[in-house]
Amino acid sequence: MRTPSAPLPSRAQPPQHRLESEVRSYSRKFPAVFAKGRGAFLHDEHGREYLDFFCGSGALNYGHNPPAVKDRLLHHIASDGLTHGLDLFTVAKRDFLNALHDTVLAPRGLDHKVQFCGPTGTNAVEAALKLARKATGRRGVVSFYGGFHGVSAGSLAVTGDLATRAALGTDAHGTVFVPYPEGPTGPFDSLAYLERMVADTSSGTPLPAAVILETVQSDGGIYCASPEFLCELREFTRRHGIVLIVDDIFAGCGRTGEFFSFEQARIVPDLITLSKSISGYGLPMSLLLISPELDVWAPGEHSGTFRGNQLAFITATAALEYWSDAEFLGLLAENAATLERFGQQVVAEHGLSVRGRGLVVGVDTADADRARRIQERCFEDGLVLERCGRRDEVLRVLPPLIIGREELVRGLDIILSALATTAPGRAGHAADLR
Ligand SMILES: Cc1ncc(COP(=O)(O)O)c(C=O)c1O
Image 1: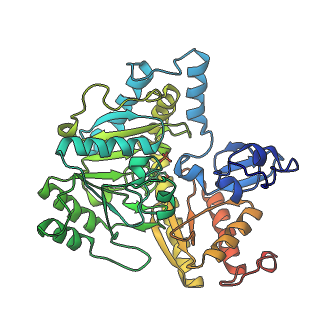
Image 2: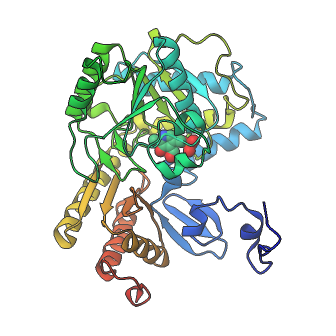
């Protein structure tokens, strides 16, 4: 509520500032008005071009307006295809389910059923938590330090960041937070901790319904769980009848180089959340993959008006075709190798810690102010790049999966040059920029 003494919003500010809530965030870091996007590029309203290594925070893995996907969407709209369908059976949904089964699930030996949640990732997390509780009759959930799972009440309850949780304005109960096996303070034997927690009848913690984790923590600072840890966690949860939820909203859909982020570990989670890039076009879509024996929902028990985004079904079906395209798969592997070499170069030349897998790399500057200056410098040089980590000290390098080698190298060069000209620990930044 505005107090009488509070200044009125200035008319001199652009309308976005005057009219949009203070809650806006990314627009503060990237002060341009964006108008168009194609492939790996964004264009602002004045026609200035930016390489996009932010990718809609992981929602644009296939870049902006991928032509083959766009054509399908345009055709669907031009032929009066449905745009809204609740959870009715529709042609668009049937085609998507068949494509997901044939291209993704069956080849990986997964027999999970698909629940459409809506419309954003946090709703799939809510559904997963509710379902795990219903199926086990237990209430508690184990989550990890640094984990991010969304901002609705249930998802916030399993999200570690205290500032984000504080915005709930009330207590978020029911979660036991355990240190992730990797983090800013070094490695931790999370499995030993969990084993002890469930074995000790005086741990104060009843057997949980679920363990939820990201295999690559994004907001937490690009920390990766090893395949060994994931296998042990799978074995532990199975032994104790605990539901294993992998939140693949960020790391899934190819970001780590394979469709699912847990493929390297050869585990089968009980519940898998997908959103962000599953629509392949930046359209809202969110789903939960459910191991059949856990599909204990009663009809309509978790509903939502926008569960059936028909346009997203169309684009998602088209985007799944990438996964049987040898050229795409080759490019993915090539780009991942280029990023690995980039990481090695950063370690060798700047002595920084570099983490990640596949097409996600975190460059840990260990210095939030420097990371901010690097981000600003990159933006001036035409690269959109986000930060993450406990203090926003990690540069999150997130190019589109389909980026060509030349553009990838160009973007990485901008980062290398910003690293070279932006000294650590200096307060002012104007001098660093030239
Ligand atoms: C791992 C993970 N889970 C859940 C979410 C929440 O998704 P949404 O913002 O679409 O609600 C996010 C969003 O960044 C995420 O990265």
